[in-house]
Image 1: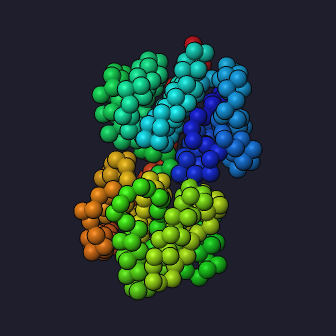
Image 2: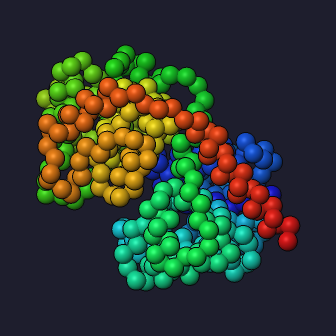
Length: 353
């Protein structure tokens, strides 16, 4: 069986790279013989890093030929079908789905987070691409509700984000051991346009935690962009902190977050890394997907970066409560494996007739 994987791969975003790694692990665990090819912005890196085939996602002739020889397409996971960053994302990913359907290949939407889809054109494209002959799984209730509102009538199944089941080889973080850091609080921040200076509030809370003996470690989830945001917050602190290398592997970033006492995070997949390792977190929200995952995980949202209804005292109170709360462990590996099994069975039926 040969499956094509379409997503935001090869852009060196730790969250999306973790999605790819997790899906590969879960699909191969269910079928060690499955052949996987990713559509990637950096196919050489993707192929070398994950041991799969990869092609240039922008070479549409090559993508068409690849799909024509495949047994089906997986679209996902992540937030692919959204127009918050512009309509181009929806045009590209629905275009790949429509290409597969034109070739009569089964399409499986894998644990995606849908939206926001604010434009009429975006809603039209998504409805046209997904309304027939697509198996739909989403990672939260809000995504299912959105698809139903735009007119999707076939069943939509709720499943966990694949990264919750990511299996990491090796033990403790080499980087933490090398720097002799203990009682770590990890931080994931990203730039977001807002007049309310949330980074200054975060810096004051982190100073307080550093005064209490915690080691503050920033984990950039999206390359140099998040590295710059991390260093911006670090510069606002009075106490010392560390910035984890932005170009380190997804696995090592997950190890660092997994070894921490608490995460204060903006990036969704930093929260997912924490949840998968049963590490409590306090989210800083910029998008409904952050609120949704925090609710699902039973964790706090310390504030919304585009709102001024929170301050360092309220954030510190949320952090203190999260330190004390016992985190409920779940067998995410088994749960995410069910999605992979569902996908493989779907393609087996499609390939057979």
